[in-house]
Image (cartoon, rainbow, N blue to C red; front, side, top):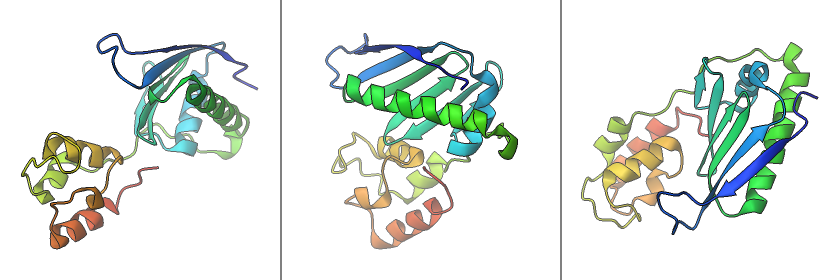
Length: 173
């Protein structure tokens, strides 16, 4: 076992204490930097950085950063959700490390769709019917995998099909 545990801190962001969600930073008991390329290969991070070693994941609307000595997670409902995600990551890190002989390490992130390509297909009316203030904000959520073409009520059938086909070439998990 590479990672035995962590110390977590769950908090509301200081910049906006009225946020409903909380963030979590966990300080790791051990340095897991050597395991990160294997974890990236298994879970498919959206970004991988070499120095310092970090892998970033987008999972169920959350941004998760795993570094050599720290895990950070945003947009959590509560401390229990933080506990579930941290335990899941601890297990994934340990499994990736124990299976490293059979895993090809990955030192790159996933290729993401381009914001401008998504925006070109949107109606650009800034109607707010999707719940976002602008089509640009909506396009950013689509780019990250948090929304899909079906979430834009103003999107024409033809452009919805084109956007679906464009996004089909990317892996958002």
